Structures are given as C-alpha cells and as structure tokens.
Image (tube, rainbow, N blue to C red; front, side, top):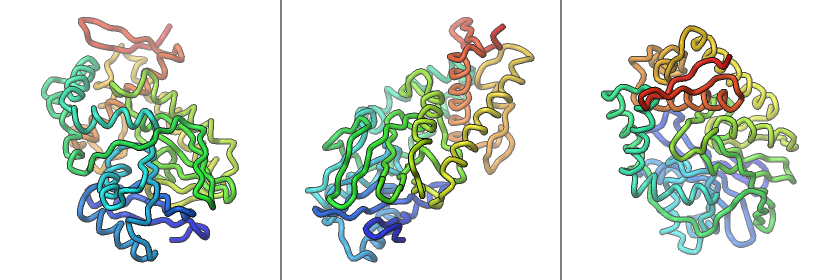
Length: 330
C-alpha cells in the first residue's frame, strides 16, 4: 500500500504471532530506500517481505538503511538477514536497544536468572517461576542477530533526500523504543508505542528502569502535541484519531490502577496474587488457563502499575523475608 508517493507499507506475515503481521515501511531516498522494522527471521516472514519488495520493483540491495523501532523479534528479527543481502545498508536503533541485544539474544541465561529472582520476590510460586523464566525462549529462533551501525538517542533528523524523519524517544513498551515523525505529510511511524486496537504491553523488567509505565505515559503525552494526520503503527491498520487513541490508552491504565486499588483495600498483596484477580484480554479468560508467556507479561505489567503508584505515593512497598508486598498508603 502506498501511503503517500514515496512511502509504502508492506504487511509481513507472522503466523507465530497473535497480531498476524508486522507493518514494514519503505521510504524512498536519493541513496536507496529506508526500511522501518522487518518482521520475524522465519522463512514465512522473509518470503512475505521479499514478495512485497518485488511487487514494488525493488530488491534487498536497494535498502540503504534499516530503522528499528525496538529489538523485539517481530520488529528486529530479519535485520541481520537483510544486512547479509545488502551489506551496504546501515542498521540504526536507539542506544538502549543496541545495548540490550547481547543480554536478550546472546547471554540470555544470565538474564533468565535475574528475571526468575525478580518474579519469585513478587510472589510467583517456584513451579511457575521455572516456566516463566524460559517462556520467551522460542523468540530466539525468530532473530538473526546483527549489531547496529549507528545509535540514536532521540531528537536526531534522518534525511532520505526526499523525506526528513525526526527520531522521538518513547520508552515504555521497550526502554529504547523510537517513533519516527515525518512533518511534511504529518505521518507518525509509531512502532508498538501506539496501536489502534491493542493496548501495548508495558512490563516491569530487570532491564526497564524503575518506572516503565510512568515512562510510557509520559511518552504518550510528549507526542500528543505533534501535528499528526495519520498514524502508521507496527501492527494492525493505519488510523487518524491520534489524540483520541492516546486518551483511550490513558483511560485504560487509569481504570486498571483503580482495579488494583480495590484489591489492595482488603489486605497487603503481592503482584502475582493481584494479577490473578484482574481481567486480562486473553483468548483464555480464566487466569489458570492463560498461556505461560501471557501470564508472565501480565504479572510484569501488574508490577509496572504498582511501581508507578508507589512513585506517586499512592501505595507503599513492603519487603518481608525478601518477598515484596504492596499496600495502600495511609
């Protein structure tokens, strides 16, 4: 699909994802095309992307730069394969995302141990911890590792010769998540920061910093005053109600905080037990039936809410025998 002359969207198939496809964007330039996000490193995604490029009359060697919004496998997975096919292309991402490649995809055993220790402190039973810590292991199969040629920090201008893209640092869904803004046509390439239907997961993680949900909501407010005619997300469909969608997501998190406070009115509680009382938008509505990875994300998202509320002086964190509980602040 041509968004505007010179900017195209390719839907890259991903049968291993509930979101079905990744939106890859191609931006024409004087020295090749700039690609935003890639899809999984699987034969299916590769062939889907290749067919899309051929339909545009271009090949992988025409790719001059690959901008990665963040290093989750569906956005970064094929970057290494594309670099092999187009050695002159440059891989570009936020500094924080580049730093995380080693721990996420190479030295992941150390990361698993740290995640397991964190989850156990927040009340996850040992039998679940053993499953939770390896729940994301299948993702390793979907990534062809490649380290970036250039790092961004936010605020940079990336020129293709025809279009100018402003890099905007939007931490939350991932600590180094980037959006890209094209002011001429008022287009926002939003990655997973802003989706039209799905609420992006924001998890408390050993690598996210101490208030990822606070960072995410601040990032939403930061982009609110951009002049945006169309949002080009990493998944689902392009949409126009930019500010309305921001408001919907903020309301969702406000309502979730109220739900958590109601639970905490009874007694101090750990994050795992709180998660089991909340409603999660899963194909399996019952907590015990939710798949392991989804359940892990649910617990980590609950911790993100609790920690944001702690920084706001709404709840306080109690540590007893190395286990973490929360209670409403008096």
